[in-house]
Image 1 (spheres, rainbow, N blue to C red):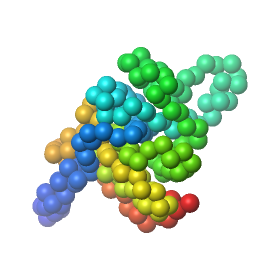
Image 2 (image 1 turned 30 degrees about the vertical axis):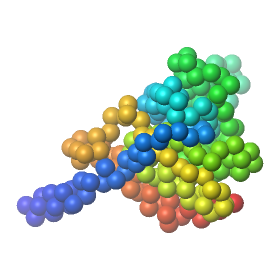
Image 3 (image 1 turned 90 degrees about the vertical axis):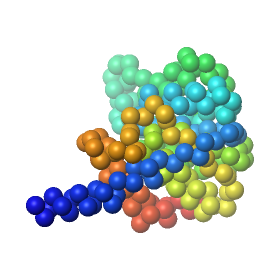
Length: 204
């Protein structure tokens, strides 16, 4: 009985975490947008919508690691990377190929993507504002990481987050289903890991 009461109190006190995790800056316009890898469908749909709404004319994607898929290819099997699938989907939905920039990197995490994009922006100076397109519960952490990376390297880049409206995450009632609980707990742990360990790695 006491455990049940404690759980109710805990969930009641933390149930606003879902809303906090979803950062929506409602961007009007930016020089480019970054589509972060992970869930394919919800993120590419959001990026395509933003492109057609005139929010940004350039889409940046970091090549995602898929483990030993090149070994599979070397053995004669055909496999299309997640990054290529996203690029092809965006083109099929009307984004011109020359508006898409694919950055090599074999990224294994958001931290990898942040470092690769930071270096690209620093070398090219092609953007002062970036829209981050990702799944809804990932936006707070993604924005935090990009802002930390640019600030640590004296790059004045404005970061604007645009959570995918196609995400199934329910920010208000996340604690009512297993997937919502998993999303929130995962993001809170990852934010803590970033603040304690990963943040120092972003200073070039």
